[in-house]
Every structure is written in structure tokens, then in C-alpha cells.
Amino acid sequence: MSLLERLNQDMKQAMKEKNKDKLTVIRMVKASLQNEVINLGNNVTLSADQELTILTREVKQRKDSLLEFEKAGRQDLVDKIKQELLILEEYLPQQLSEDELLEIVKVTISEVGATTKADMGKVMSAVMPKVKGQADGSSVKNAVASLLK
Image 1 (cartoon, helix red, strand yellow):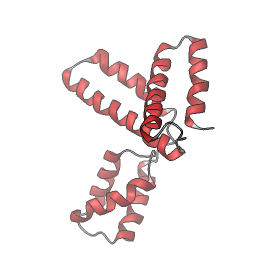
Image 2: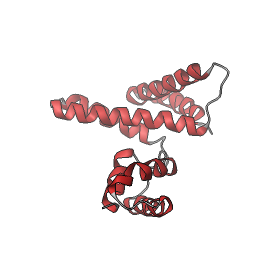
Image 3: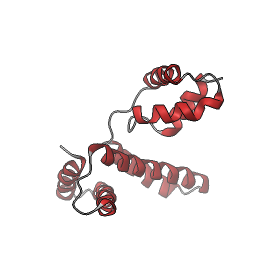
């Protein structure tokens, strides 16, 4: 089942349950998916990889907003964004554990022959496609930084 089909199904369920928070988040994600279809050309069907990219972008935007709201002391908005993140994370693939991520990074470091922090960009560009949707960029960056001296 594609992400769009699952969103449609969950949207109907949220309407039946009168779950406004979930309904709002689902509509926002659907709008992002539809905007991407429009940008690519109306007769295009998004691949699972493209859908995942859009979903990951939505999660990242909310995490960035969460940090800003926490800095500003806006607890009402912090709570709202945390709730949205919980809903969005239902649609993401299972996240990698820290040990799994470190193992992928170790393998990638040896593949690209990285030895110093100067090679961090090379490692990051090789790791990110491998963990797409399963780990966020900051976690990957921290893992790479911890393994490169």
C-alpha cells in the first residue's frame, strides 16, 4: 500500500473518530504530496522513495519548529508540534537503533576510505541514502563525527 493510500484510509478513520489533530496532520502531508505531484507534472505518480523524502521533510520541519518554540518558551506550540511528530512517525519506516546506525557508518567509512574529520562530507553523502527515512541527519552526523578523529 502506498503512503497516499494509507493516508486516505487513515484520514477516513480519523474523520469517523473525530480526531482533529490526526486529521490536520494527514491533510498537511497529503497537501505536500500533491504539491510535489504538481511540481513534477500532474500525470506523475510518486515513487515510494519520493513519498518518503516528502514525509522526512515534514518531520524535519516540525523538529526545527519544535526547537524554536522551546527556545521561545511557547509550551502550547511545543505540545502541538510533539503531537504532530508522533502522528507523522507512524508513517516512517522503523528507525535504526544507535548501534545499527554506528555499524552502517563504520562500514561506509571503510568503503570510502575516510580517515579524518575532513572526510566527513564524503561519508555523510554515502551514508544518507543508505539510512533514508530510518535516521535523521543530525543522528548520522553525530555518529560520523564520533567515529572520525
